[in-house]
Length: 361
Image (tube, rainbow, N blue to C red; front, side):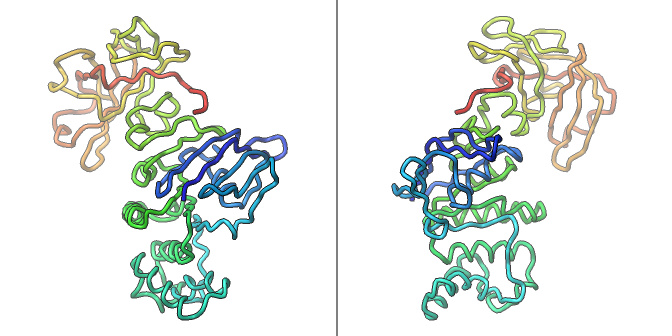
């Protein structure tokens, strides 16, 4: 089912957690609410779930109002047909996997044959059929999270809400479960909202990302839109852009980066910009002989070399004092030593000239 949120506002005393937020999620779409702690993403999800009562606005699920501050409609959470998966697994250790998943159906007084059928189907869906009778206390963290997911899915929800469900898992397991979650959501065609502060997780799981700051959505779009075209330097910084440096406009295609001895050619510059920043991804800077042709070629000195498996991260101090992080394949590592003089190049397309902040989307 689709979700439509209009004018959502949530206040705690004099503090505003969500400020006049509009949001739509299409039927079968996976939306990720992305942002730093305190930006309002979890509060937004909790309002949709019915776990928080907004101060103002409307929330519709499948075209039906579940909250409307003007008419007084406020459906309780258990009548919104929403499944939720939390950061904490909330698994009962004294029950088996089957009993944990069956619990909400038992509370709904579903008949035993249907409980058995639905639980078995759901455990098959999440890859836990072989563990149905295992005690929950014997499960790994990843298995517990699958049980929590199955417990939500067994209720056949119209919408699935997930609040940082992978944050307690180790890095390798998180990577694997991201793929499993994405595969499951796409196979079921289930409308979902996923809350996270992890930009890699957001990019991996979303059809659409809504990036939040200070209770507002400041940018919304596909993962490629968000990654390739951040609308401000603060968004670029949150998304992991490694080089963000104060700059000034020279002309419509040229900027002056603080700490560089020469001007920098760029593909485009916003028409009106206060607090301009040059934003360059570390992987878009070409180090050494390969970067000695074209525009934006600079001299510098290697200040740090950090081996990272398939890549090497360098800190290059340019003539003039500006420092750039460069990420290059490890095959180049043997060519350089600490304090070497180097050249590096940045193509005009790789330089994003952005304002420090943008208004809410």
